[in-house]
Image (tube, rainbow, N blue to C red; front, side, top):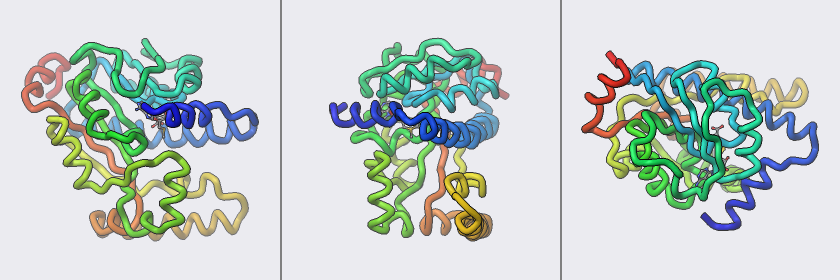
Length: 262
Ligand SMILES: C[S@@+](CC[C@H](N)C(=O)[O-])C[C@H]1O[C@@H](n2cnc3c(N)ncnc32)[C@H](O)[C@@H]1O
């Protein structure tokens, strides 16, 4: 991982202004509730009941805390490129939390098959070599859950939107087919997937004032409406979040016995 990338993510979690820090903390907590909902739904759909979970790129631990509270796994570890982020995560009271550590962003310090489930939530679009990170997740876990924004769409292709995405560290813009190919490339079979056009609360989170909230409401209503009637068309037009749960083909029977899946 380049020094520039490490510095970028260290700075991202070292906001000095307490008001700004609280605002971004609340934003991450809000996102974590949505992401944890996706994770729980996918595990349930695929009949996966992991006992152990590692979140790779756990940031400040917002999602780990939400997952700990909702209990899809008994034991949770977190690995993160940014040391200040890992420190914030360690300060949380996360039910079931074990190791929460900074690492080099390439080699997760865990043995092959150490976990039932690895979670890569909004991380793969941030890395220069997505196949390598997917392969690393598949090395340490039998199941891999990935969530990304699908940004290979007409709205997100506009120069201003691409610039915004780059500003927050997005090096990749995926569509659904690219995510399927990435998982296949890591030797994983997709077992369940979902998309989410995101609720009004997400679109309106940073809206200050009535006019901005009305604009967010209009955007949310239009997007949710298109997504409901034509979800595949929606993801070609604007950004939706995609989450997929995939597993190694030869281990599903083994996991069903060990974790008591139906
Ligand atoms: C958008 S945040 C997502 C945080 C958390 N997973 C979530 O969903 O709330 C992206 C995170 O990925 C981390 N990251 C970037 N490259 C990484 C890598 N190669 N390995 C692990 N984490 C990485 C960043 O430091 C940042 O914390």
